[in-house]
Length: 385
Ligand code: AMP
Ligand code: P6P
Image (cartoon, rainbow, N blue to C red; front, side):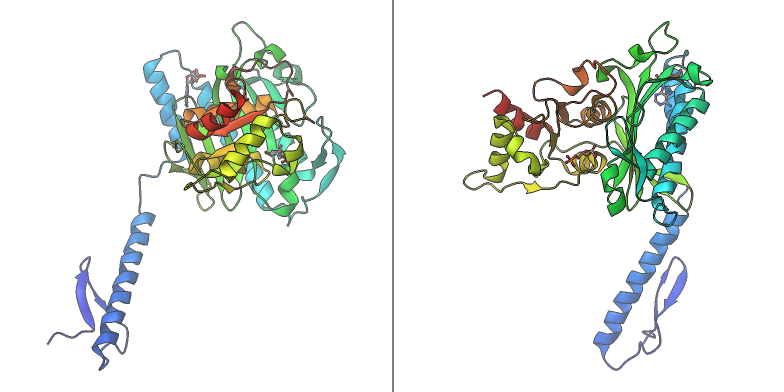
C-alpha cells in the first residue's frame, strides 16, 4: 500500500503531504491531497510567470512598430519613436507624483486659476510643468498645446530644438477628483507639423482625423497607458517592480453593444430633447428588455477607459446652459475619438463625426457621444427624428 503522504511526482519532484495526512479518515486525506495539488499547481504557475521571457514592454512595442514603419517606408527617421518614448517617461513621472501626492502634500489647490477659470490643483501645475519641460527637451516637437496654458507654445520661441510633431495634451484630466483619490489621467494627441511650417497655431487647428497618434495614461489602482498610432489600440500596465509599462490589453476592440450609459444626469434639466429621449429609452427599454446600468466617474479618462473595455456609451452633450458642452475638442475630444474609432467604436457630436470638426481656437469645447457602435447609433436615431 503506497504511503498516502507521498503523491505523484510533479515536474520530477515528489510532493510530500503536510503532517498528519495519514489520518484515519480517508476523506481528510483526499481533501488535503486536493489542496496540496492546487497549491503546487499555483506555485508552478507563479514560477513560470516569473520566468516568462517574452515580456512586451511599451518601449519594445514602440521600437518594433518603428522598425516595421521603417521597413515599409525608408524615409522613417525614428523621431516618432523618440517622441512616444518621451511621452512614456512623462507618464511614469506623473504617475509617481500622483501615487505619492498625499504623502508629499501635493493634494489641494495651488492657489491660482488656469485659462479655463478652474482652480489649479498642485498636481495640475506639477504635471503641466513636467510635460512641457520633457516635450521641449525631446527635440521632436515644434508646437505644444496644454489645457493649462492660455496660448500655444511654439518650441523655437522657448529655446527648444524644434521637431516635426505637435503635441496637444491635458496633463491631468479629472483633476477635480484628485483629492478623493479617484482615477485621473493624462490625455495626448499628436499631429505631424504642416509641410514648410516652423511651428504655429495653424499646425494644431486641424481636424482630429489628421492626428497620427493619440493616447492616455490613467492613474488609479494601477497606471495604464492606452495608445493608438493608427493601427489599432493597445493597452499597457505599469509594472512598478520593473519600471516598465507591459502589454496587458493587446488589440483592444470595443464591444459592438454594451449595457452601460455614462452621462452626468445632474445636468438633466438642461439636456436637449434627443438626449432626454435616448436616456429614457435605456432606462425604460420596454417589455422583456433589461435597462442599462448607469456608471459615471466624472474623470473622462476613467469613463472612456471603462467604455472602451466594457462597451456602452459615454456622453457629455451640449445643453441649454453650454452651447458646446464642457469637454475640450483638441486634447480631450480628438484623442478619445481617435482611440474609440481605432477600437471599432463611434464618436460623434450628435451632428457629425468628432474627428471631422474643424477647431477655431485651441481651447474649443465639443459636445461628444462615444462608445459602442450600436449604442451610439441608437442615440443618433433620436437626433434624426
Ligand atoms: P518618423 O520619421 O520616425 O517621425 O516616422 C514617420 C511616420 O512613421 C510616423 O508619423 C508614423 O506614422 C510612422 N511611425 C514611425 N515610427 C513609429 C512608431 N514607433 N510607432 C508607430 N508609427 C510609427
Ligand atoms: P462634470 C474633469 O473635470 C472633466 O474635464 C472630465 O474629465 C470629465 O469627463 C468632466 O470634466 C466631468 O464634468 O460636469 O460631470 O463634473
